[in-house]
Image 1 (tube, rainbow, N blue to C red):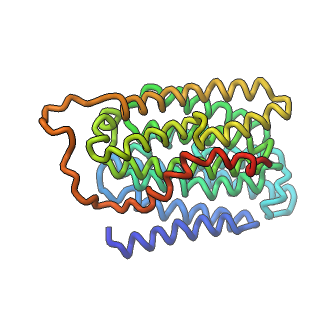
Image 2 (image 1 turned 90 degrees about the vertical axis):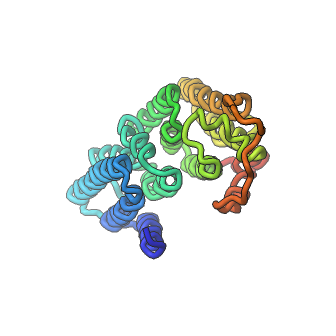
Image 3 (image 1 turned 180 degrees about the vertical axis):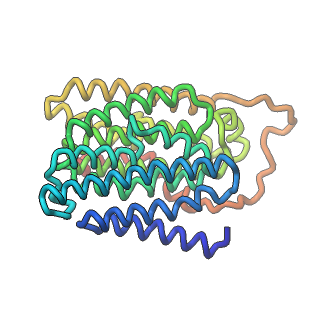
Length: 345
C-alpha cells in the first residue's frame, strides 16, 4: 500500500473518531463510527492474505450490525421522545439496545467472538490500532450515556467479559489471541465500573492503552507471534526481554506495577458502594488472566529454547523499526503506581 493511501486511511480513522467524540447528535455520532469502520477495513486486509481478508469481512459484518443497532435505538428514542440528542436517551428499550450495540462495537462478552478472530488475522500494527484507537469512539458514547444506559445489562456484560477473557486466554499459544482475550477482560472491568464511576472507567481505559501500546510494540520489534517465539526474544534484545515481561505482568494487574492501579481503585469503589460479591468475583476472575500472563512471563524470562548454535546470541544489526515510541511508552506502563493518590475520584 502506498504511503499516500495509508496516510489518507489513517486520517479517515482519526476523523471518524473525532466526529463521534465531538458530536451530540445521534446521526453525527453514527456517521463518525461508520467512517471509522470503513477506514480500517483496507488497513486490515492490505496484506492480501486469506486470513486478513477473512478478518476484515468479520470486522465489517459485526461493526455494521452494531452501527445498525445504534441507528435503530436512536430512531426509537427519537420516535418516543422527539429528541436526537445523545444526552437525552429516555426510552428503556432504546437504552438496552444502545448498550448491546456499544458492547458489540467494543467486543464485550457475549458479543466478543469477532475480536480474537480479527486480531489473529491482522498484523501486530493493525492489531494495535484495533485494541487501542478503535475503542475510543464507542467508549466515548458509553461515557456520554453512562447514566442513561442500562446499568444491569452493562454490569452483567462486564462481569461476563472478565470471566470469558480469563478463561479464553488460558489455552492459547498465539499471542494475538491472548491479547484479544486480555482486551475483553479489561473492557469488562471498564463496563462494570462505568456505572459506578465514569472517571474510574476513563482511568481504566487510559491505563489499558498506556500498557498495551508498549507491549504490542515490543512484540513487533522482536517479531514474536507465539509463546514458543518468546523463548528466543532475549537473543534479539537482552534488555527488551525483562521489560516485556514486566509489561505483561503490569497488564495482568500485578502490584507494584502500573496495571494494579485501575484494578485497586475499581475494587475500592465497588466495596465503598457495598458491592462486595461483585468485587470478589472480579478479583477472582482476574487471577485467571494473571495466570496466562505469568505463563508468558515464564516463557519469556526463564525458558531457553533448544539452541543448536554455538553462539549465545544472534547477530545484532541496527534495527529497521524505530524504537523511540517504545522507549517513551515503556516507563509509564511499569512505573505509574505512585501516582495513585492523584487519580482517586
